[in-house]
Length: 200
Image 1 (cartoon, rainbow, N blue to C red):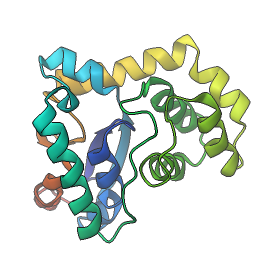
Image 2: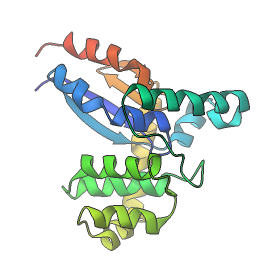
Image 3: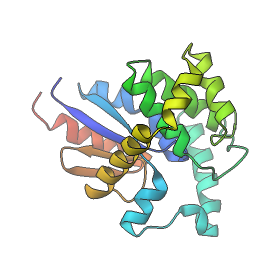
Image 4: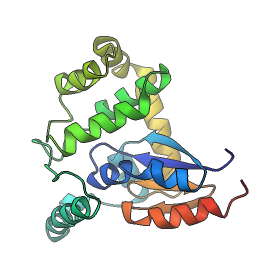
């Protein structure tokens, strides 16, 4: 398939979680592929001059309720925020990059980690928690975490983050269809329309 969408996400983002549950189905309807791109939200916010939603108390309170509504709308289990929130998601994002580079089940790992974070409410900044998710998929947790703490993984995450910001992203989830940017879980209908407008 020639059609593709870049899906920039951060495991810390509840809207990235929501988008992760339906982005593949959306792409399938458009006969397109999804390129899952872990990125570091604080880096995107800094580069774009944006601020974290949790730093605006009324907005943070609204998001909690809004995410609950979305989960119900999508027939997902009730959202349980991670026991530590916000958490430092850098290691979680780097583990996903390492898994992708190893040719391991990358998308299943991303989905499993999103579920652990946003349904089970685990601490995404805890290496032991990440190790358990890796082990549950029969991945070598020790090797993945060792590599995720290395310079190559750090550079890869920064590269994704810098690319997202350079292309105009100011938050996550961000979707790019060619040069066209769509931000937010609630923009997937527009992403689908843009993909269908591309030549097959």
